[in-house]
Amino acid sequence: MGTRVLIIDDEPAMCDLVATILKTANMEAYAVYDPQQGLKRLRSEKFDILFVDMHMPGLDGIELTEQVRASGLNQKMQIVMMTGDTSPKILGRGYAAGVNFFLFKPMTKERMMRLVRASEDAVQRERRRFQRVPLRCRVEFQHGHRQLSATTVDMSLGGLSALGDTPFEKGAVVQMSLSICDGAPLRAAGRVVRVSEDGTVGVEFQGLTTEARERLQGALLPLILDVASR
Image 1: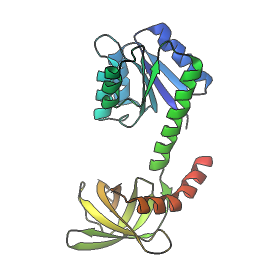
Image 2 (image 1 turned 180 degrees about the vertical axis):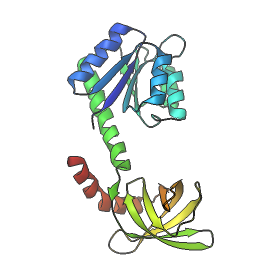
Image 3 (image 1 turned 45 degrees about the horizontal axis):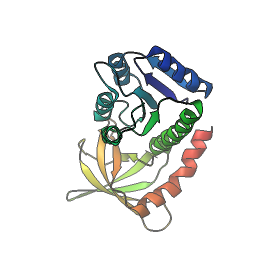
């Protein structure tokens, strides 16, 4: 899957320059000169990285970042803020809004590519987190006073799908015991995020301990990397 990048800058020459550089790195780069049009695309299309100018008329880069982080398809995307302002106040506002990196003007190709590589690393980590792989194991759910059994259909580092006697409602908080690794069962909490008509439930992991996360990664990462290499 190629990295999709959206560039939003009201200066067409700068916007097109950034897009051209990114395309030399084999990225799908799209330039938008109007921040409102850029926000509209962010609400309807999935992107991996956003390059956005700080100072734009009508909707500046920080306000746009706040709207992206609030909800939607691209809430977790990597955001690079382009600006010539290096004041601590601006940096603080940007990071508080959800900016991941700052690219200061005048920009150079070398600095931009360093940020691109850092952003891509973060994108790949996020993709691996949600990359589901087929994995069947027994899972015991504890919900209130009920204990229910099911079998996982697939799993990722962020959650699992399971099929069985699981009459949960969306939003329910459950405790799980997974027979995924050698030794004692892996215990984790989760929140039901999907309930399908066929009885399959999707559960998002919550509050994993460091030990549980390491055991989960040890079991899943080889499968995830195998899928990614195909």
